Length: 303
Image (cartoon, rainbow, N blue to C red; front, side):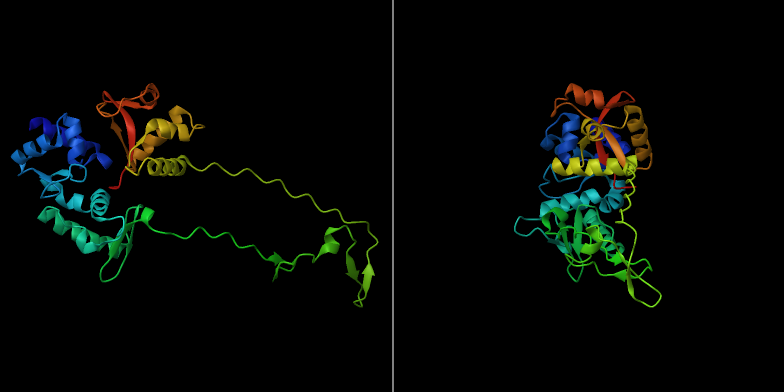
């Protein structure tokens, strides 16, 4: 039990995707099977809770300290896990009333209230949408059929006096484009031919190179793409993120990532090495802190 509590406390200190861990993850960290860990946790029911009350599935049951019920009820992680558990392939949208089912009573009540506040505040994780109404329906955006981004409209031609004019149809304005001399008018309004030779169009100004987006925006985009490609588990290795931003020097990358961590946007986690044999490249890409080699990046939702 002291070992379990110590590991759980360390995960809480890491924050982000590390806390609260699933029962399966806690068992991995302590080197036990989920059934053994679950049985041991019953000895500390006054202090440690399982999010699900009956037949807790190790992969979708969270382990948390009793004082954190309200915080966990408002977390994106609990919402994502409950929606994942409740959705079905032929019914991917889930009624709000169904989402708290199976949770510990105290957590269930707090979770339902948190969902209602989320709808009122229009505050949801980036991966989830909701259809409001008498029976709000929650769904993963990946399950929705969304329209493609519309192509930008063709701008209308603008006259020299500033008035917008419709773009000329095909073939119109040919005289101006095939080298013919322009026609002018005299004071009486009669057409006169210009004595000047063919007009040479002015060279278009060279386009200036687009500025490089700031590191934070590029890092966000790279993390989202890599996370979605690996199953949206909110765990991406530092190696793949460094590979996605090859032009950023390592010192700059680490300094910018440190700034994002201070802003509580991301957290770093080590690997326990039991379920994934780290490659040399993954170890070399890690960051050593307090004797731990941090190799995984997770997006925080508690900022």
